[in-house]
Image 1 (tube, helix red, strand yellow):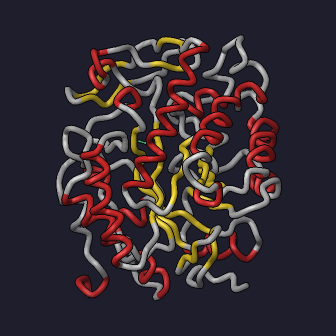
Image 2 (tube, rainbow, N blue to C red; image 1 turned 90 degrees about the horizontal axis):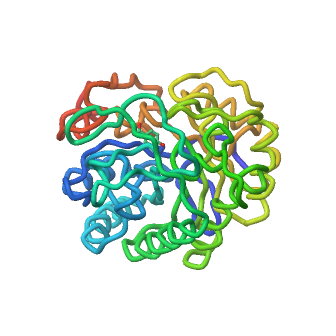
Image 3 (spheres, protein in one colour; image 1 turned 45 degrees about the vertical axis):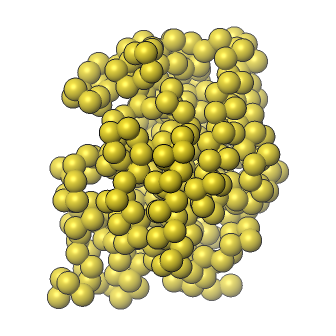
Length: 359
Ligand code: PHB
């Protein structure tokens, strides 16, 4: 097997044209009712030369929303909107998975039905401010879910998985990273429960396992990916022993026959790592996608050393729709504009130039 970033690679029953993945990135450019719209089609079409596109995180229900103008995958308008995107990507020969999201405590009453209080495993308020339609507002103390409420959220994931099939996706990625609801259960800084969903790592993983059981009734397991972030402190997250706890989680995931395990290594936007990711990767018998701070040289080294099978690029792909071609030809990369990462219009979204337009 070639260890080239630009050679094809098999994930389950899908043949990807290369090993470069578009990392999931929130861009806050859905219509105000959380429906994907025309500029989103163009954004994903432009990036369809990725071996695999993983969409921005998309809510499984109105209760799962945590930011303005982020897409959902729970109602029929959203299916119709997403279907135009999956069609565009498939027309270009690409593959696309949708990332399923429930924000939990990283939300605000103003974003939720009936201004309800955000929910979480435990009533622990994250530091900082929520990004709301009226600007930044302090996070509130979330309401701890009652044990018998959890199955309803699991069924929302199952519904969203069904909707994703109807929208023409090739698969789904369960977002269990970065301090959103599933990760809030996984890590012990945010989970102080005393029922069967808290305490031991076996118990803290129960919610993720139930979600995976539910969506496996809808999709073959080789079309389901999982994203983890063992040590990312973003969203006030912490864990007392990420190496040991995620070793357990990944061993459990390994037996499911998943499409892939996708890991945000280290802290978001930083290259330093405390956790030994190679040790974690070796516990997973399946495709591993590494993400966070990779450039071409680091990506090629990771493939050559067997540290990863695929590499997900975030910010470089945001700013370079033709990233695959640019990496292949060692071309200069466009500079990302941080001011247009979240929200706005075409500017900083679909107007980054392709190579032939920059010469
Ligand atoms: C973000 O909106 O900043 C964000 C969303 C989802 C993630 C990470 C960051 O997984």
